[in-house]
Image (cartoon, rainbow over all chains, first blue to last red; front, top):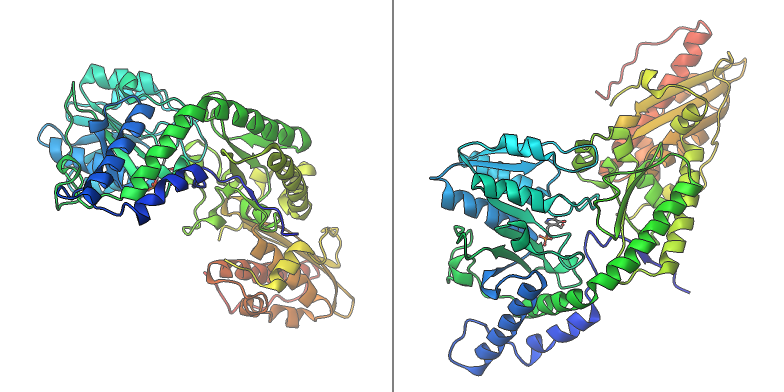
Length: 406
Length: 137
Ligand SMILES: Cc1ncc(COP(=O)(O)O)c(C=O)c1O
């Protein structure tokens, strides 16, 4: 019997729903046209597929189909929104405000904007991962053109107060952009209700294919424009040139439709499983901490720190049978622990000890039961081996030990 | 990234896990690394009257490579003289466990732990501590 494999890393990417794949297939074989070909049925069919997907996606987030710009994914959407707004509005001002806990696609775009002559404020978050609204408002200046704050964090699942942020933006006449990659398709997302003007999201986090994403750009009150970052044939109302990824877009559309229908039941089911996982682990193991706000949080995510256990080592105890993710330095190329958890004020040691579980549509209760046993066994194994766990148990004040940093 | 069989074996069945009485004169203790850096190794040796390492124990907080490196180190230490112990090189560990380049620091830490345990024993017993000629920086 092949070893069971448990996938609890749905924030990294979701498996493509078979119904999505089925919808895509004809667009590889029988309808291979270019959606921009205006003079033959191949082009028309492809265009119809794209139009329909645009409607499905627009419907999911309650916007107009014309307000959806297709891209290659959320990274591109973030780049287009931030750099595109900066270039388009820089005569009005050059200041952008964002959070230290944003995704790299936002942070690195901001970094580039600074090199292009922009000014960026990176706000701290509170211990629970939420933005301090007073600090946010206080950071707005005469030259502020844009506030970029993600809907839900990829590492902790923490959901920001979008409505309140939107009101602040409205009051000060500042554009509001949100990376909603982790929220769309999983919880109700309605950018217009929140006063959001630009919103990035992607197919592969909502059971659609990889390599296709979208940017919502508000068209009325206000009419928002972004300078294209990809120049060429003038596709997507001139904001993003390049032949459309028709099968990908069609799949993205189908994924949106399924999410819309199944989201409520799925969120309820997954939050129960998540709570079971979390509470059982906290019951059966000592010194387990939830990272990020436990209330304002995505229903399928929990990020836990297991004190004095190193995350990557812990993951090795799973024998490659279970996929989770860790904020430990050892799992990243940089050898730095997660900057998101550090921004929450976790010490480096707790960041090294963190594990993110992100459940998904195909997660079963059996998977969760397996995960609980694997975690309890793994954490105990690692703690039996851990000198600092032993010191902690012996009442040694670890702060007072002189460590040899290396 | 696939790990070698040897590494996985040391990780799953770590040798010589445990704690010795660090106040015992026969015991030398090396504690290296820092929790903030994601790895801490404690390596202990028990030395016989004629200067041979009779027993070695470790506990490590860290990734799989760090645990395997220290487990291997305890195996190698047993039966060695202090001088021979001092000549264990981190690259020997890298080779034996086939550590990938990003994990070389784990073997460096193990070497540091050995040196620090031997030094602790020597200082405790009023023995001369040779000047270290190797520095990993
Ligand atoms: C919050 C957030 N933004 C952006 C991205 C990047 O998305 P994509 O892989 O579609 O470029 C991700 C996924 O890694 C994410 O979690």
